[in-house]
Length: 102
Image 1: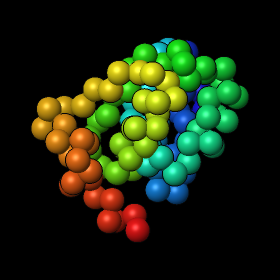
Image 2: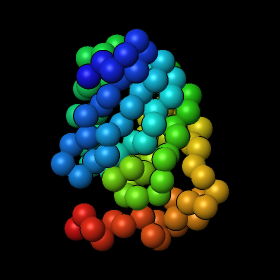
Image 3: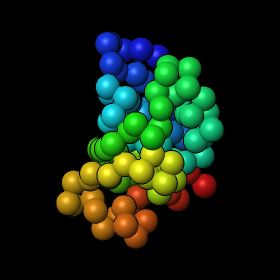
């Protein structure tokens, strides 16, 4: 869904947070990783090319916001940004609340 010029909401599916794409260069959160194909289809619909994404900003280290970060980093080649306080959780998977989604 187009929110404003250059800002698209890639609708979160079931266990995913909302994913935003800004100016086709910044992805804000990346979802759980369970619905990558659906998100890629939405990106294509909006003319967003994954390889043009330069940055992925994770708002916080909960599974539905960052579970797919490894896959999205591979797909886009983007650099990932997260608050230092959540870095360990993102790197190890500990504390991302994944058990809430089992």
